[in-house]
Every structure is written in structure tokens, then in C-alpha cells.
Length: 242
Image (cartoon, rainbow, N blue to C red; front, side, top):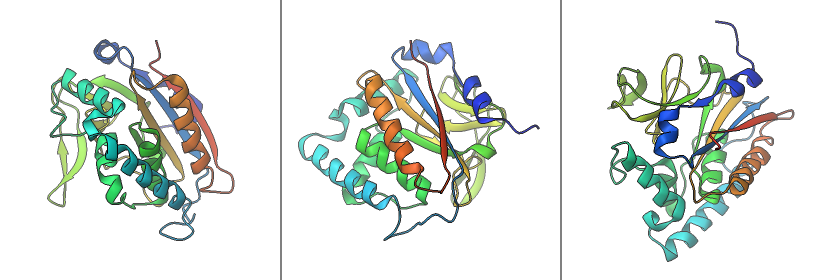
């Protein structure tokens, strides 16, 4: 299969009308960062994510001192979105809620790219996922699943292929599901690793988040990611806007 270019990939990304019907206020900021240095600092001390993570953890503590997680506006909106396609948000939490709940006790440290986007997610209160662009086959599409699509994941420490529930909102490419339940769980096939050189990020916004706030979150992510290499370039596109 010919290698897809970043501009063509972004231009071809779509949000299906069946998803728009669930939440007409939904928008996604898609961002691709190219030129990442796999040997950029990671771990502690000199990691570019350290400052961001500390700020995110402090921000979460402040938020949760005043409100329960499900009372925070964007988390509450995502809980309602999950209910709209039959998911139970108290059992399968959207990625923003899961991270915000965990942040006061310390965000997980995975790799530089993942650490950066987790911190931006909590700081800007937006669900945010990152994947390896080179592992995508065809454009990213947000659809309601038929239930036949493969999803590469792990269970009990073993690799398994699952299938989404019919009607579930999923991100997919030509080879199958890349993220289940809108922004709940990402697959293994396209996961970021320490060798990722081009990363693809999705920032998910619903009504409580304005376009300006979504742009600010994308700006923060871009500012952090460009520190992960001497010549990182970023391209992005907003999809799903009315």
C-alpha cells in the first residue's frame, strides 16, 4: 500500500453523519507531528513532560477539591454522550474522566509522547488520544460500528481481537477499530511507542468546550510536542464543526 501523506490523511478524515446525529456539537481537532526524535529525553529529570505533568496533577487536585469528577462540565457532557449510544459511563469512563480521577495521586509515566498528551488532556479538560501515524491504513473515520470490525487489544496479558457493540461510536481505519467508545480505549496496533517518529493526536470536544478552548489545547500540545525533536513539524485540521 502506498505511503499516505499527512495532508491527504487529514483531508480524508471524517465524522459520520450517524455520529453527528448523536451530538451535533461534537468537534475533533486532528494533529499530526512529524520528525519526533525517539531518543528525546524520557523518564525523570530532563523529560519535557515533567513540568506539564506536575501542572496537570496540581490542576486536577484543585478541580476535585471543589467538585466530584462527574460534576466537571466536559466530563459530564462525555458521560451523556456515552449514554447516547448505550455505554455505561460509570463502568467505562471516557479517557478525560479516567485521567482526571487518577491525576491527584500521580499520572502514569509511559513514554514522552503519551506523557505529554495525558498532561495536556488534564490541564485543558479535553479527551485526547495519541497514535502512531505510520501504523494507520487509510484515513481516520469516526463511525457507529456494525459490530464486525476487529479491535486489537489485550486481555489477561494475551493479545486478543475483540469487536465493538453494534452502534458503538468508534474511530477506525481500513484495517479495523483504532479506539473504542469514542475515546475510551485505544488499540494496540496503532499505539505510540518509544520508536514512534510521526504521531497522530485526536482532541475531542463537546458543547461545554468552545472552539477557542479547543484551539488552546491544541496549541499547548503542539508547543510540548515540538520539544521532542530538533525539527518537529505539526499539521492539524478541525473536523466535525457545524
